[in-house]
Image 1 (spheres, rainbow, N blue to C red):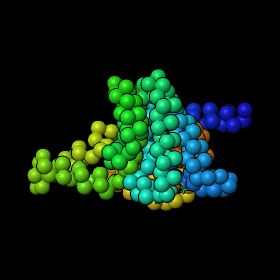
Image 2 (tube, rainbow, N blue to C red):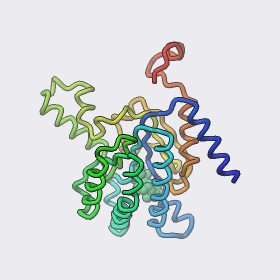
Image 3 (cartoon, rainbow, N blue to C red):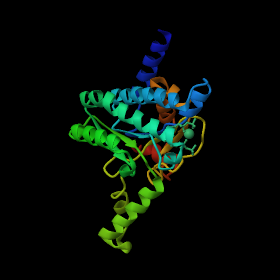
Image 4 (spheres, rainbow, N blue to C red):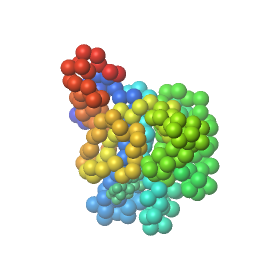
Length: 253
Ligand code: IPE
Ligand code: IPE
Ligand code: MG
């Protein structure tokens, strides 16, 4: 009960101040969570999918516009084949089990990354939930799958050059070709598990994002931990290159 009261109080506090529109999370530490318990790494990935559910629900409840989750990098595909296979199976299970929750809560599912590298059984489920949720407006949940931030930039540059010619590319033209085009600016990037790096995630989009590194391993990151990260964000002053006095005079939303 004390735990619930604590979460409710935190939620209240978070609701009282401006929320980020777009939060991204590097969901790290599943393997270490499992290894610490003498379990196979996949047990950590399974527990981590419960965190995805809890954090998505909380984000929607709070009214965030966009939540972007780093679920799998291109580099992760070079892990032992059994682990990659288990990750794909979990992803398919997740898409089956969360489909109703996504649709009932007006969430639009999106995916970014080199989706052609995903096996057919994942791709089909992903396409089906994306299509079914395409008209939803409550929140965009974007899964980064087989994602590579440098590759995103390379492909965007190529497309932008095709449209505008190399000399015609400006920041807006490039941003418009990223996989994240159409999403709000990234406000907050959270990484779990104590690592302090961004591991090739949203390289362009991080330009003015607030960074929050927490020691909690992803399977232990639930509603409370998201609320704490949001409190941390709300305590910061985003200056965008200006002076403190300037932004205090004209606060930027
Ligand atoms: C994050 O947890 C999930 C993926 C990268 C797929 P890890 O599997 O990287 O867990 P650690 O970092 O080895 O503990
Ligand atoms: C980043 O975590 C990718 C995901 C969370 C999906 P990694 O575990 O792959 O990152 P490194 O290897 O520690 O940089
Ligand atoms: Mg890791």
